[in-house]
Length: 291
Image (tube, rainbow, N blue to C red; front, side, top):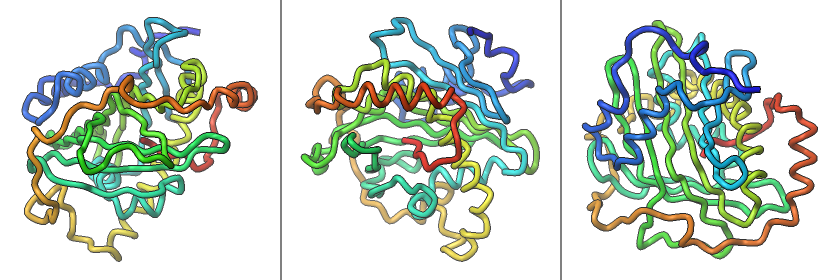
């Protein structure tokens, strides 16, 4: 059933994400993702429960990888805490049970870096990894984080993992009070392999609410954890703390999905359909990572 996203969009004047993005080292694709995160037209609401909503945008429903927009209300998590959790790699290793390995590779500017992330996938799927260029920007009490896949000469695809592609991924964190915020997650990700696109699309809509709820629980526990683990070390807020080597943007190139090898995983399509269909789109609190 199609519904307008307008009824649940955050109210009140906000500085345009797309306009502000021009001050970050982002491509047109990254800036466009910010605009889409705030847009209302062209999005179909597919899930809404317990403060979490999911919208889908697709032109060719059967052949195109959908763009997913997932929004969650966080009534007892300040915007700055959520922003810290999304940045803190050491904490990610604690709360994200699907992570295999994650680390920052190099710094491009004071608000952009390149990083690596690999994660476990349910069998019989192969595990995935991704190399992304990430940019971030505080806007008063709101925050932006964007990323997209790049090629790094020292980190080519591995034989034991499938290299996934972040076509456009972004987070918009909007403060709604001293101890509350709303986060919007926008993504179009190609997990590669050779799963049919409809399987990828259906699983994305099902997994997004689960991932958001898991992240929310991590945010609630973060302040206590951080007090015991380098409480003042936040290089995403204090660039002078960064220990990363510098890297020129010219050493990177955009990672296009069609340049990567497809690994045959089509045999799992039927079982995935059965599992997702039986879930009824409700989701649960099982471990699921955001990529």
